[in-house]
Length: 434
Image (cartoon, rainbow, N blue to C red; front, side, top):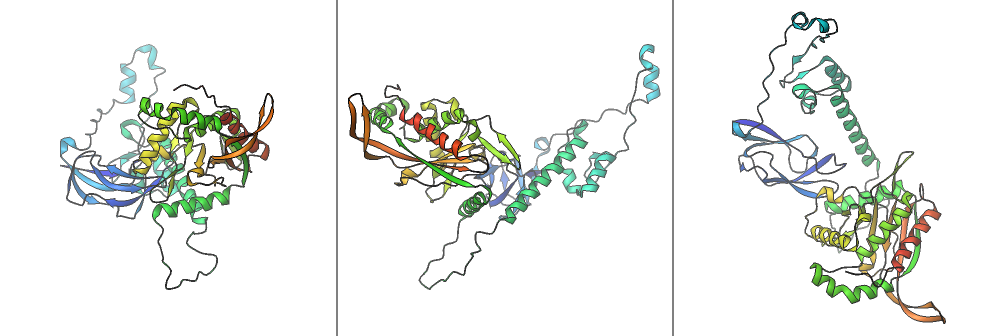
């Protein structure tokens, strides 16, 4: 038999830790490889974690509610030797001495042959070898032997190199900074004024996702200088096209088409025209994103919101965007999203019109610098220019609300961008085919 540690897996871009929600297995249970063992919550999504090996779950190292860093051990699995950890490669026989190698080498190479002296390495308590340089760095940075044993080695026979330990130190410091930043934000549970509670009031505890959303919203308002611009857009062409083609579309593709794909398509086109909307802020640096990844806010049955991301939205046609919208929305409502589905967004669209709202002032999801809310489509009398003069006609109108970070997006850019989105929507071709 062999014992192996099950580690907290990496569950998506930028995720450095997870919270143990529920253990689906208990100590002593037999488990199969890839069988779900526990549920983990991150700041993006809840997910089940499969077993890395089959065998017996002999020890649970992280209790429910514990916050565990990615790569840290969470359990011990006892496996059969043949299914356990791969047997280390046999060590090569000790090399001959430098003098023997030089003597055996051809005469014309003996003068230039240089064999480095072996480093003074001794095995540590975990059985691994560490060079004096790595040990000194670990000592100076306060890295414990347990932490050192968990650093993946890229050197010969899996040894930890200088780059390996320096990379670990950098990641650890970034994690500490992020935790400090979160701790510096005032708690959402601490009111500014005393709240009076009567006997008839109902006290409802926030669930974990609601706490997370509240914290993110407070954090965004603290970080970004929010400004919102509004444009009214004529959606008549899109409304008429959809009404005419929605049955044929469903018959051909097996699913309906909502208005959301039209919004995302127009936003993606406008981002190509105004790439400085597709940025993030890193201190005093602006990071200009190449990929156009549009997030869409989805309301969950619980009342909370989640934002899955359509990657490279500018490279998809209307049908492709509609397929992704339907897929992600269905998976979101069935709690089937992964952390990667929620990562990497560079711009976000929120459909407040689905709740009957005509406009809104959305809060920017960090680290993005802009978000657009689309309002309800309503019939209105409007002045329409015709070759024979202006007429009053019934048109389908909608407001776009564009919130942007005034630290890096000025009113001209923010206003021109939302106007360009409106132009793309209004210019939709009624003759577009399926």
